Length: 180
Image (cartoon, rainbow, N blue to C red; front, top):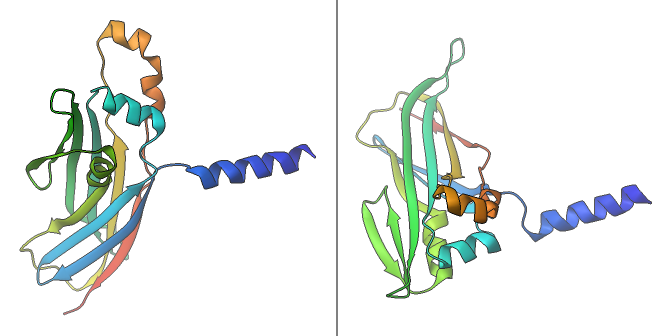
């Protein structure tokens, strides 16, 4: 009886949200350029949304790495990138300021739902640009994590729940083939 209840509770919690994960990883390649697009699912929870609305800056770190698969030796790292998305609520202007490091731009949006879409989506990121790739199989690895929130010591004691928002996705891998 207990086992059935546990299984039902576990499947219900998984259906309600679950862990953060990378989804929709898409790779495009054209003559020396490899471009990746993806999004992070389940990266915002209610506590995090409340903290963002209260003006606490929140940063997502993204890691993108491309490897050339080799049979007899370790895979060769072709490219490795780390970039950030940062969100801050401006109480005076009542909007969200978002900085997308990979695009080198900052924008302002009026509502949280639109801000969340920008924060969790990476579109057209150039993994490799202007580099002739050898024929063979390559593997793209993508990961996202929440940058640890650093508060002043006295606020850490009061806002101890901030550490509960932490998320880190598992690595998501996609294989691609380069033909001559």
